[in-house]
Image: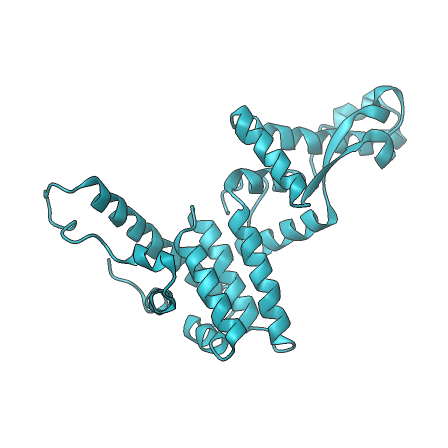
Length: 252
C-alpha cells in the first residue's frame, strides 16, 4: 500500500513512540505472496496492519480539518513534554480504533491542541481528556446519544392535548422514542450496556415527567431520556469534528 506523506508522518511518529500499537504497522512476512498458504496469525496481522494504515489516513483528514498541515501539527506538539505524551497516546488509540470515523475524531484532537495560541498546556490536557472519552465510545453509544437531540414529531399528536402542552409533550415522547428505536437495533445486552454507559459517563439521564414540567395523568411518572449538559457538549463536539448526524451515526 502506498502511503501519503501525511500518513507516513503519523506512522513514523507511532513507530518512534514505541507504543504497543506500533506493531500493527509491521505486516506479516510473506503474506503478500499471491496464492501462498498463509497462517491464521499472519492473516490477522495483515488485517490489523491495513486497518492501522486506514485509520492513520482518517486521522490525517481529521488533523487537516482543523486548518493545519499534519507535519506542522506534529512539530508543534513535539516542542513540549505534554505534547509528546498526547501524540503518543492519541496515535496508539488511532491505530487500534475500531472504525474510521473514530480515528478521524481522534485526529482532530491533535489539530486542536496544536492550534491553541493561548494556554497551550491547558489545551493539550483538554484534548487528552477528550481523546480518552472518544476512545470509550462505540457506534451504538454515539447513535443513541445523537438520537437524544432536538426531535421531530408528528404534529397530529397535538390534537390529543391542549395547545399549550402538546408541543412539549410530543417532543419529549419523540426524543425518548428515537433513543429507544436506536437501541432496539441491538440485542438486549448491548442496549442495556449502552444505557448504563451513557449514564455512568454523565452523558445521559432519565427524568420523570413532573421533573421537566409535564403534568396530567400518567405523565407525572412517565420516564424520559435526556442528554445531560455534558452530553450536549459532547454531541456538539462530535458533530463539529466529524459531522456526526442523528439519522444513522455513520459519521462516527
